[in-house]
Structure formats: C-alpha cells, structure tokens
Length: 364
Image (tube, rainbow, N blue to C red; front, side, top):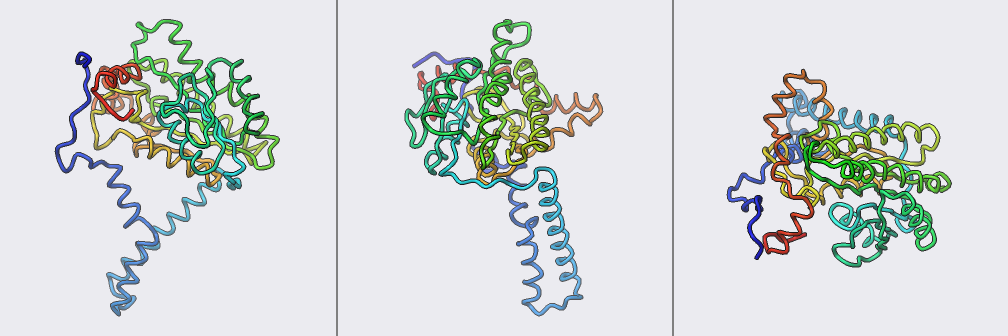
C-alpha cells in the first residue's frame, strides 16, 4: 500500500440529496412540463373530462402548451439558421479519427463507434487503457509533432480509408502557477492543446473537402478557455485559442464547404484522470461531468450530421454571459464558485496512477 498522498478520494455520498443538482432539476423539467408533447397532454386530459374550452384551467393549459411549442419551433429555426442543413451520415462509410483516444472521453467515444460498426483510428502517445477494442485501430502518435501527424495520416488512409470525422480531444494539464512553469512545459501545453488542432485539421481537412459526404470536425475545449483559472494559465490560453479557431474555421467552411460540419464542446470539470484531484466547491450549481454524458452529446451531433455547440453542465451553456457582468461582480462570482482554488488539490494523471497502484482508487 502506497503512503497516503495530500489528496485522497472523497468519501461516498451519504445523504439522499447529494446527487441532486441544478442540471438534474432542469433535465426533469425539460422532459416533463417544458416538453411540447407533455404540455399538450394536459389540455387533452381536461378535454377527456368533458371540460369546456372556455374553462380557466383549460385556457391556461392551452396557452402554456402553445408557448412551449412556439419556443421549441423557434429553437429549431434558430439552429437551422445558425448551422444550416445537416449532412447525411452512414456509419459504415465513416472513418473517425480521435486524438487522445487512449483514455477518458476519447476512449469512450472510440469504443462506442467501434461497437456500432464505424471505422475508428485512435491517435495517442499512451497505449490504450483497455488494450484492443472492436473496430478501433490504435496509432502511436504525438499530435504535437506535425511530422508524426502527417505520417500517421498516410497510414490511416492506406489502412482504413479516407477520414470523414476528426475529433480533436488530446490535451495535457500541468496544473502549476505561471512562475513555476518552465518554458518547455508552456510550449508543450500550447503544442498539444492548440497547435495540434492546426496540425490535424490542416492534414485531414483536404480529404473532407474532396469527399462527397463531407465531414465533421469536433473541437474539445473547456469553460476554462472562457473564464480562466489560477494554476491553469497555459491550459486556459490554449483552450481560448481553440475556441477562436473553431469560430473562425466554422465561418470559413460555412462559406466554402457547407457540407463540412463543426462541433464545439466546452465542458466543465470532467470526471477523468486529466483533472484528477480537482475539487468542485459547489456540486449543486457546478457538478462534475461524467464523460458518458458528454460522449452522448458528441455522438448525437455526429450521428445527426449537425453543427452545434455543446456545453455541460448547465452553467457551461451560459458561461459567455459571465463576461457581461460588472468586473467587481465577476470577482464575487469567482470567489463563490471557488474557480481559483480548485487546482490546489490537483493530482492529474500521474497522481491517479499512483493512487491506483496503491489501492486508493479503482475504475481508471
């Protein structure tokens, strides 16, 4: 048994309300009172009881159902105007490239698509955690090295076919104050978290433009790229750059190649080894996100051929409004959220491995 580190895994939830979060409440309401189908059931039930249309409960329920339906239609129109028509997706013809797919979120997406019959290529410097996976081909590649990316791209084209989906998921976190970061560590963060996106897009995008079925580029960023955080200067800067890259690339492709779709993912703290040890001060407003929840949203967007922006948990979808707040109030919000103190207990992948070997944790 290894010696006990400064941070240990929090104890199991011991209260019935511990799993309760704002996201769970909103999800329940979205599938009940705020869903058009459910909203129209209420006036239908009233009518089944022979209630007249001019009765107050009937009028209120009809107005409510009409408003919910109009909002739903407005949302569909908004997405169509923003992202255009979806592309047709046939998994039997899709070749999906995932960077950083040897563990965490990337591995989960790779395994799901592999089991569903798609052809998947995983690029990572680490070996796959689960060894071989059905339908998944592993390529050892440091995506921060453009020559390695070019070499592996040729191998994928030869072995699997022309890629149609690119998921830029690879990332590293040092979790140190700026004064403690070496120049080499800063450069490695920017190369892996930002420049690698340019390398892979420049390498694979030309094939997308030649394909009749188009393609999808998924960019995994973070809310930290919008708000920043202490001990994450290099990571925040790279993720902010990734968001800007996505927005500019989306604008370019919309004009020249509308058949190529783009997806931006800005999750909060993920329950993966990358951020192992980071404490979430408010589990109700900002719960830790399970990779399976983000994977579902990413897979849905790819399957349906949509361009979209995915934020999880709920606050991540509205995080842009943070910068609209008065500067003084922003500081109050930061203190209440604890965004600048969460990294004090950071262990990361290395810490997770040590605790796993010492019998402290399971499931990685």
